[in-house]
Image (cartoon, rainbow, N blue to C red; front, side, top):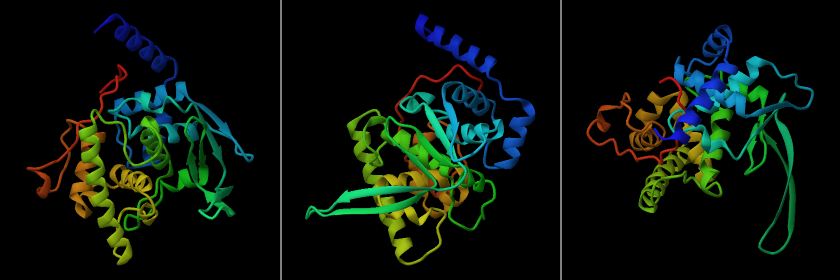
Length: 278
């Protein structure tokens, strides 16, 4: 380990020591969101996240430590192996008590201006703050195991990962153009399969919202991967394998038998990991 790497590791250890998550609060968070693993690494990287980000309440919401830790723990799931650097472009998280009505404006091909409003449970903006509705964040703790997975925190932070190499298009940072091409081909095929399920009104663990655009499909599929991985693996083994190869490279996962000999995972772009417990 070089001098700069040792200095970064020392600085991150100091941040964790200065911003520890109390035992009782961490236990409360795990109990409230049972899909979160009881992982020392997740707890440590969540501490780093809290040290680096600014939280603000809006619309009269009074922020609590429990709210901030709940957001941090869920946000850190996708970058547990990739590193927090993928979130560097966003430093501010704004929590509203409920969904926010956002005005929208667009021009069609004929030059006509269309204006409408849209209710948002969350929104990630390139280079700007990330907005979350606390009612939606809290709802992730009590959702049906038979319904499509809904997790606004994972959804919006996966959009940040998607935007780490440009606009949100369903293509996260990968080591090479060849792997990017393979990723898009594999994800697009999964998107087509999902669209067929939605069109035929077949049940799915993936939110139907993902049928609209490829970047939204990446985000909602990631929600299912982290919250109900067994359901996703049973529904679409190829998609599960693609996401596992990106988010959990080199790890042994409980894959269905159809994936045992052909995991098909992609190597992820390696980002310097914090020197935190594994």
